[in-house]
Image (spheres, rainbow, N blue to C red):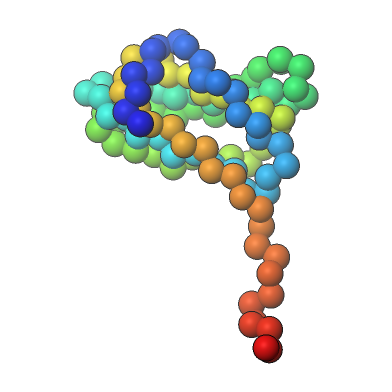
Amino acid sequence: MKETVEAGVYSDPFIFQGWDEKCAWIANRSEVDATITFEVDRTGTGAWETASSIVVPAGSSRFVPFHTSAEWIRAVSDQTVKADLQFCFSQKETREKESDKI
């Protein structure tokens, strides 16, 4: 949390495949705006491509939903900032809405 993120230095890659719902939450805890770019490797072969970019104003946070398929995802900032980045992955809800009788 509140780690120094160096401009142009990529995050570790995170496994991205196999989840129905995928998103990220980013908090920019610095005094400068930062553009965060998310890259994906669709085939797991190291062929990275830009999936999306978002400007995160200084002192604010952003929610980023993903509507793409890939094996891996990573992020990079255009500015050196103190920031938090959390990926959230889940499956679609398939349970019944009614409780079972005991």
